[in-house]
Length: 328
Ligand code: AVI
Picture 1 (tube, rainbow, N blue to C red):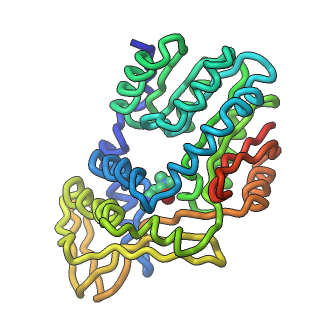
Picture 2 (picture 1 turned 90 degrees about the vertical axis):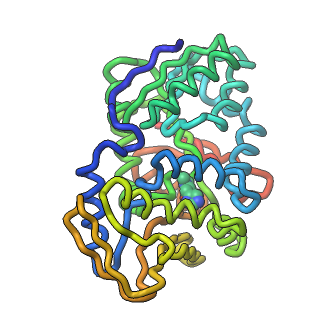
Picture 3 (picture 1 turned 180 degrees about the vertical axis):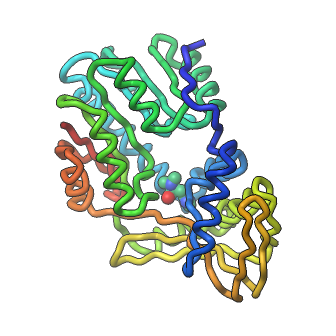
């Protein structure tokens, strides 16, 4: 068994009921109701997201796999220019994509160790087991915890050069000011010579983007609606989930895909653990997610604003997705 560091007892955030209750109450008290998308990922939500990644319409995962498959050796060269490094994978999950990079690095006998970070202890145990079988030579130390907790731990316990991976266009789920704060925080844990490889979904035909978030088989709808099931279960609420529908909308000027849950009727919902009764007018919506689609100049500028220097952009064949390498 590879060593595993447990910084957090929370699994998918689900044990911290008071924070969940507070965030739900705050979002549903707004004149324009919102719920934070980070609460999508309980056990069911994580399974549904796995299914989303396999949908024919959801091109993001396949596109990034293509980027990594085609450029893994070049990436390996750029990461290892200055010798040994820690490869830190933020939100590693099952590390399906990182595995390709790891094969590229191992194939070239590069000197590094692999530090996957995820809030899910189960995911990290599974990942460690898989890695031991598939890449037995690899040095792995999984960290269970939140990103910044993990970066702080690394700063204190693993000196040396760092290459941080933040793949999957996860940055796109932040609001613009949140993504800047997030990148600045990452920067504050890094030093000159360190690097960041960030995955971003790029602007493209709005119809393609819309299909990815409104798939024909309804998996994305189930993923969105699962948030209401989760609130019912964990906060003792009585949402009639079939009285809500999934609505996805892309704004090509802003480059923002927005997802909503729309109330099909006038109704009241009681959320016991949030101490809240919520009134919905018919067709009133809850905004549940933003997925930002970028231009490359926008991503490079975002990096610069946070103290990163854009180094190389790696594209898929259609130039619809990119992994952007930044240095410090
Ligand atoms: C995790 N994240 C990058 C996904 C996305 O594309 O924004 C979450 C997702 N939401 C609906 N489908 C997938």
